[in-house]
Image 1 (spheres, rainbow, N blue to C red):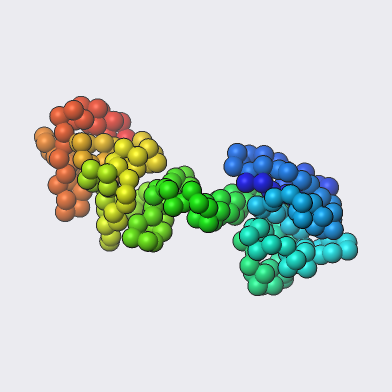
Image 2 (tube, rainbow, N blue to C red):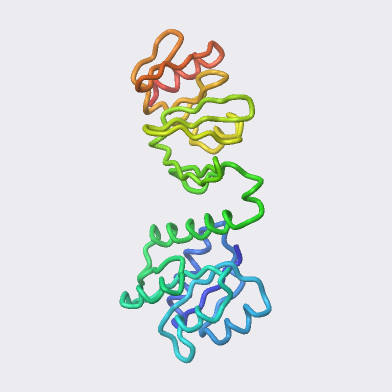
Length: 235
């Protein structure tokens, strides 16, 4: 994503630059000390995301935000909490208070990356993507499901489809089992047979030819048994 920083404080600009540098999906294409300079830039250059201060000399961040294309995401960065309500009326993606914590910054950025993907043409070609370290996002039944890894019990593969079983749902997505597995942490999700991936943290019993998760008994294939048991005992 092409992004720019707009802030009249040099220290704040440098701090934001350091945070952005740690996110490979972001590309800094401009750094501006006022909104007027930035406005001229975005009229001629594509910008996906703006990290925008509010209180600045001349054109303030709120008025600037109202003047730019709606397709450009805005994350406000300010030391003043009382602008929060007005910022959301402008449809800002997020509102970060200075000094900005790294975890809050990453949460806001992941939201921007996720939204941009959902709005892109590539989304129609993709059914599952690993957007965060603790979840996967799946498109199924004309809906978008964000599923936490900890909520997944097991996954069943059916030819070119997979069914993700959670505590209270089963979600079918047009992805084969191998592809779904590639988006899950291998330390937790183990292939136990040709047709099943199990969340090792949810397994309560291992039998000679199967494993038990909740009320389900899943087959433990000969090809996978030795490696699975070895890894399971290490956990």
